[in-house]
Length: 402
Image 1 (cartoon, helix red, strand yellow):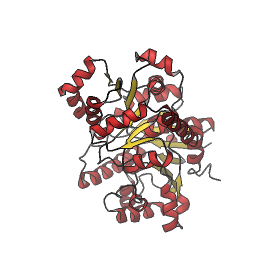
Image 2 (image 1 turned 90 degrees about the horizontal axis):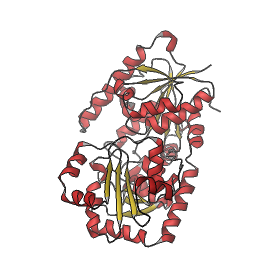
Image 3 (image 1 turned 135 degrees about the vertical axis):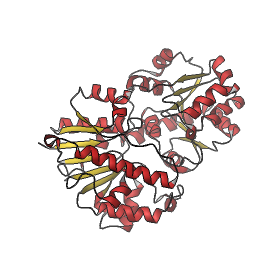
Image 4 (image 1 turned 120 degrees about the vertical axis):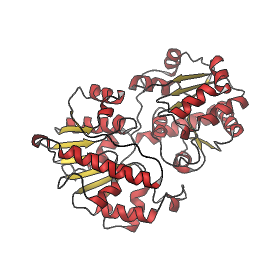
């Protein structure tokens, strides 16, 4: 029987729910003995409690050291890579002999890929695979967005990583990356595989039922801001747009709210007026799966108008698509590119409140357009189901590779 170790020190993103949940369900169903190595802070997060509840406590757990939260500058990011690698190595080496795995799955390979090349595998001779979510070394060539800092160096380091004998394969949720890599590095292309981003929301309620439970009137146009809510989500622009909207808007901010947004919410007169008018509500806690489905079931539109510096991906895009909810996204960047490529909603200059208001008005007044985006989203989501994700990821594991 295969024994597998999943490594994920942070419970705040989508690595626990849905990535780890979906993989764990599939591996356990296939008779794999699964252990999670994570931090104490992750064990105290609501996502971990939800994860174990969904898995009926069938996954063993080992604790690894915490990782320091360094600054966002280049030196800080590199130091965090080494901190991440050091913590994972310490946690792995501390495993008792009877808990040593046959294979390791790293769900946030972005966190230690460069350190693994420079310092070697933290798992010794044990084979491992990983998941990349933020690689963008090829974006410039696609016309999506700048390719980040030193793309040539990142490309060289990725090639070195894929050449490691203990690397079974690496996965990426970006379908364009393996094609780009194949054209440039065909000898290592087999080790870089696409897995669809499984932002699957299972609706349990009708729109009418969900709205009644949330206290949203049938006539209100409900815009959802969901996930980890920080300044990169550009919430201020959406709130400013309400001053130019004639529609009866209802905005909900749902998810963990960062300190900068908390300050905005407590200091803005616009926010106070919207709350008093019953047009803005805030759910500042982690949403469980039932509340998550209720939010998406009730929503007319999902806000993805990120600030210009946020060019990366968002799992909310796939979540909204799976629920048949069109998105309002910022022009440019990966989210805007995907939105336009797959007709998942409207793209707009998210820094311009009047442009945001005009886009909301356009969507509110055009049922046919909203229905077209809804159908396109559902079609988009079909190829990104839990089964599609786990089928593709199992191909990265030696035991399941065809």
